[in-house]
Amino acid sequence: MAGEVNKLPAGFAVGDTIASRYVLKKVLNSDTGEAELFVCEYDDFPFLAKIYFPEKTPSEEKIEQEKKINSHYLIKKSDRFTFNGCSCEIMPFFNKADLISSGKPVNDKRLFETIIPNVIEALKTIHEAGVVHGNVRPTNIYYSPFGPDQVMLGDYGVDISNAMEPTKQTAFGFFPPENAKGIFGKEADFWSLGVTLIALVTGRDPFEGLNRKQILKKACTFEPEIPAKASDMLKNIIRGLTIKDHTTRWGYDEVKQCLAGEEVAIVDNYVYEPPTSVYNFNGTAVDGLENIAKAFALDWDNAVSCVNDPALLEIVDNYAEDKYNDVLNCCKLNDKNLALFKLISILNPSLPPYWKGQQLGDLNQFASEMVVAYDKEPYMDALRSNIVSSVAEKQGIEEDILTKIKKLENEVNVGAGEELTSYKLRYYVSGEYIYEIGGVECKAVSDLVNYVKNNADRLDDVCNEFINDIQFFAWLEVLGYGEQIRNWRKTVY
Image (cartoon, rainbow, N blue to C red; front, side, top):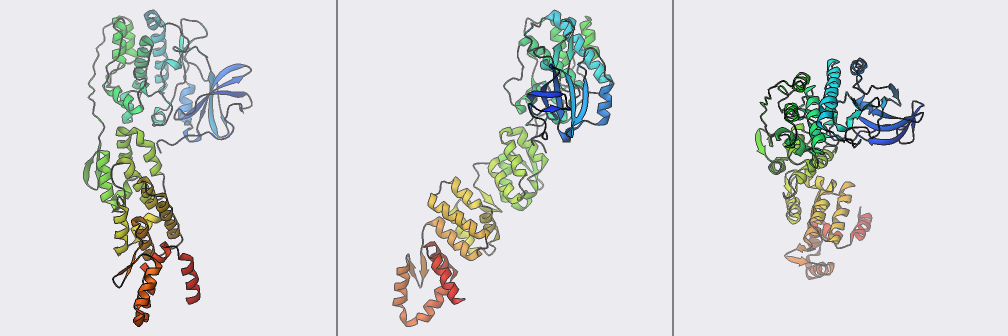
């Protein structure tokens, strides 16, 4: 499920040695979507260890494809093995030799004579092998240790469909618009190269400071931020590489032609379509998360099946990214009624709380309705699930009353009767501990004693009246006579 945290098994922590030779020294990235990256050492030489999560192990087909890749513009994977059930790849690590960390100035001469030609040749080699690089960005392009007039592209073969998940630690700004629609072709690598060039000539990532959803939206609508002082050739290359329509985006041939001084057309037929905020619920189109929550609250039985609906999760991801993880946590609950209760409150915090079609905004009303309801099961279920105390706590109810409600919820979970529970709840939330008999309001046991004395001439009828009344016992319990009642019952039954 999207958003879940990937983990490596034991044996992959800083200080551990894998395959009897590589000592893990530092975590570079704890979750790229498919792997964890470490700086490691072997015979005092630094390497980069890419350790795949068990469920993200690359296929044999992909491994065979990558074995065929060979170019002096690519950082070759020097070792590959399985350790503790995880696929591991080892490659050289050029510390502070990438295009950003090195601190070396990037001018037109270096771009046109070294960086762009070398990177597109590397991409051509990868693509001809049927592989998408998937992670082109400044920190994955390194100055070659063999000389300053060559750069090398590293960490190819990333599965972007994994990296696109919201919680992954990836550079979303280097992903093109089509990735959001599930299209992951080689054209994505040229978009990433275009954004890389913008970062190099401006000194900053054009998507810096934006969250994932803002990045994806901007990628669909932005025009390249190119300094006015940039050469016409560089402007054209960046514009060609950042065409939003992946079918007309520049690739190897177009960049090569432009570098040769040829004129190349820039055609972008992309039309931005904002993601839908409309959810089809039970045959009705509902627009907006707040309205979806209202619809769920009023049609509980049909809404329960929507808790795990990917279409709903997509709308939340698009329009309330800050709520996405909370919604995901709801989906993981085994009790789908409880999940729906929480989901409604997340999507529309201003909506009164609902439980199985019953509004809990006014606990007095809820308790009164429970007393007279023929079917008390939805109310009892709310108590079993600790929903009533949750609502009471959010409403700032007095601590003493909250404690009593929580105690009542515990009693329900061990088998307390529906009628007795309903009366006790009404007493607690109303704060009025009154028992009425024969038109007389009794606020204390002494009032009841006086009533009995005043009606001594029909004592049997009076006693039968309250002895057979469940509300009477609820009243005594809330007044604090529960222990006496239990002892009395032992002598009677």
